[in-house]
Image (cartoon, rainbow, N blue to C red; front, side, top):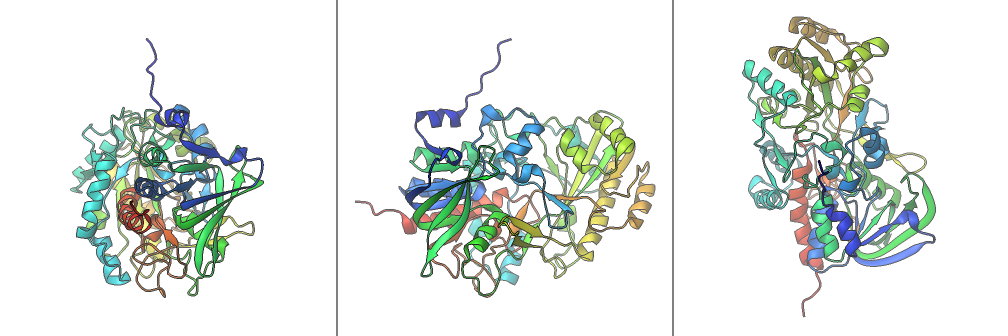
Length: 536
């Protein structure tokens, strides 16, 4: 049979003359000029680049990672994590207790996420207005921007039946009377391969890599890869450029070459760890020491189950079923709520997440085709005892996230793992293994519940992960309590905007990509109106 040929629109675009520079090839320092420089090419940067280039602005888009396209995506974890993720997928909080998966490539997290698309919950938006004074971002204000981005990126209900990994969650929840829903996905022509986290090899996922960035490049934007934005340049209270370090071909070490971009306006879209870090390195005005504070994750806990029939959780749409029951039924000021879902189960990711060592760990890995996993994403930031973390700098200037979990959050971890185990047993699990260093193989829910009630819930005991980072440059009307104003402009430095998930005053309670798309589309449209060239 003749192999199917997949058209690679990005490689075709580069061949046609898109302006793309790999900074690892620089042999000397370079200085460029542009109307706008955008740091980061993920959800925020990609949306902004398209909006600004469309009105005729000269845009330079800076990305620390490489340009990798569908031709490079081979559905292999050993290739994908070093190539496409921050710190090869091993980024951790300062105490090593939480592993954080973040994209580091053109398209950022949108290139490697699992396609789950949720609008910002009404309760979150109401909390922002009531507690943080955020106006203009109510449900009705954002609705047209959600609609616009959903249409732009093919976000729609996924009508294919869920894979067994997700269907176990649905069946177990149904047996307990817990409502579930189907997840909308940003895909077109998806083949249901299941390897979204390693980059889509058929360009079905409507990431920034295949949507907004090609549109911006077609409108004469410039893309610079393997360039680490180091500092925002500013004089007399105004941002006027960016200085970047060129990285080597592996994207790890600085080559010693510098790239400067002089500009009318700087947009930070480097994510909720990257954007605060750049501001901290830049010594920008921060009279109330807010930059990097109230940085939020969705601390996520994991429960694995051995099922009697094959699950093959590595095949099929990675996430298609969810439950918000334990968000919707718990008041924001009460016990911490959590969202339930099912992640893809690939060998490497499973191996580094499962607890235990030696024979015990190997025994579970041998059961990989029969393994089912439930995750619970905890909604942090809505209670005085869940204040998130703080981005700070190491001695070499690289970012580090301090993130201590309080007893309030650990109580939620215990409840979430107990609920997950109950759902798995209700769906017919033979055994359940919570991701906790002292957990065992439990063969009944009664046994699991008793054990979980006694296990120590603390850092480096319960396994905690996260793929969602938010906050650190929160928006609000009062410069005493926020980094940027309601337009996304920095309070204490002109000509600088922050357009990414670091704007959020709290975590969301849902996967953040669609919220970033909609909010940034709104803010970028305002910036485009202000900066666009006069028409003759």
